[in-house]
Length: 504
Image (tube, rainbow, N blue to C red; front, side):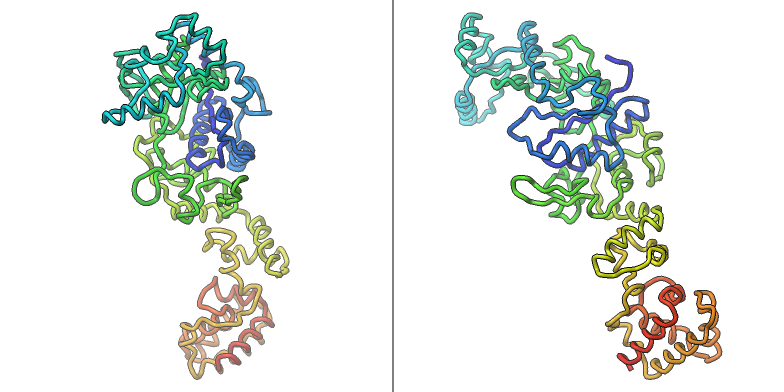
């Protein structure tokens, strides 16, 4: 085993990358970078029946968008290539045969029908059929057939699998970096299939062989793999290899109640569970992704890092560099972490505020253009600066600032109740005050208007609320005098006159 930290994320290309998988990739990435190690990606595509076109490219694009690209993968620093298991399949047969030769595995010739009959028989007796030490010597296996019989069956093309011969009566005392010491009784385990008659290995064999050959130092994976830990440790022992250190991450739970957050929960519950949009190539069904919903990659990284880990403080905002510096497997929790879509929006609000106003203006201009509104970049940038504090996504901008571009045609009914008999004449007087201001900047406008209100001995609310309503159409928006400066004198007076005509 190499001294260098080498960790991997090993997804199957059976569909889009779920947010739980992204969290596993992130924790592997952070651990590698914290320890000056290597983070690599291996595509585990031995199950060709479940292969989905486009899934592999999607996985790599998602990690690139998030800023956690691998150091080694398909077509990149292929030091231990190939990085697709389907291109390594010639390797696995020799290792399966090695296990048969050293007594750690055996041929099993039972047909699917045979096994089905045994399961049904066990059920009728109120039992569960487990293929293991209790029956393997009575079944059609190389453990009770002569070598000649086995050779003949194979030569005649009889379908077979190679199963692991799990030891009997041993207690495995294993260590998990997150969960501590765990014990397993080998007599309760089944003899898993390692190699199938179609010449493809199962996950268990391919995974162990590849982790060894690719010099993986730590296996950091989801809690759902915990039941496979005894088999994997035993396989390392069977090959005489040093096992990597294992760490099993807690589940990501649904926002309400228990249960693992699944691929089907996303749009059904009103939030994405995938990093990018995904269109199923078979059904055409679309699932939404964080990128297209307007989340920043920094947001997704930040909220995923805090699902099952914290640094022991109350800090919630972490850059990727800070996460690398502070990440520690000892601070990963054992218990599942509840997914909180509302909190994720809070993170996005934070990261939106950190964006450059000019970049936000570029993104906003695309939305304005779609609405047929042409505006100078400088003006859009100013608008963004006044509203971004209240936005969660760029898509919120128009609702927060439509009045900077388009005069209101309707007025908030609730606010109109405060439009009294004398409001129209007051508004026309304000229009005259504005007409007479030469230095038309927010500060000068505010001084002149407020001085006039004081001299007229009118209540501030009696002027400010209807004035805002005239310009915006509702009692919302940033500083009123900033709005007046930005839309300009002529447009301000025109909007006051329209409001008076409509509401007099």
